[in-house]
Length: 302
Ligand SMILES: *Cc1c(COP(=O)(O)O)cnc(C)c1O
Image (tube, rainbow, N blue to C red; front, side, top):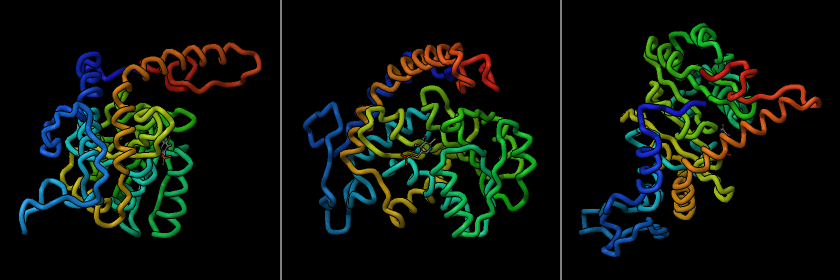
């Protein structure tokens, strides 16, 4: 995998990873000058006056620890808005079920994370009568052929879990733009360190923070990041008002802490994964290795 070059990884990305949750001097710091966002467990917040809430009112709607993490995630992904969810599936289902109406049409890449596939087939198609087309998105022509005037959303997971299939985000975004429809990307496996879907034109990026973003196997969580104000309002309403599937303050703290080491961890993951992949590929008892860094991968990296 290659890093997105136009962001000067060493300086900018790593600096954001370490400091973005802490740079804002928010009123809730209460003059204590914390350099780490405190874990705010309060469910309710005092009002400034009888008819004026302060920045936060009720923690389902917004919470200072969650706001700090959301700002950190938005900045890492190069986006305006982020929402932190109780799981990757909560982020994915909120995105898909909010942006595709019952009876609507969704085109999704195939061979995706099994939970997402079940969400699409059993909940979206089975329960809400959404017409779901799975296509091999490694070739954008397959996506173009499945999109029609009724399509509400194109969904792509790249790299896919677990077969590491890749798709061309920019080429698929062109198709979405041609039809004036939204394009969402599950970028969990690349993390914001290796892939920046918003810069390539995607409207919504989803992560399971459970994986690389938190990175310590001690928190289930998810996130969406978008630059689209209307999409953000729609998803924030679904999360904060309708579904209530936000990440708890303690988990927000864990993810914000995990994200600080994302750049260092991803460098090691890449080096180690390459060594393991090469070892397995040369092993006579291994039939096939799926890893995008290998020359033998069906879609070698340029
Ligand atoms: C793990 C995973 C999810 C689901 O995330 P949870 O946090 O387990 O709900 C979604 N997409 C991908 C690519 C994943 O690897």
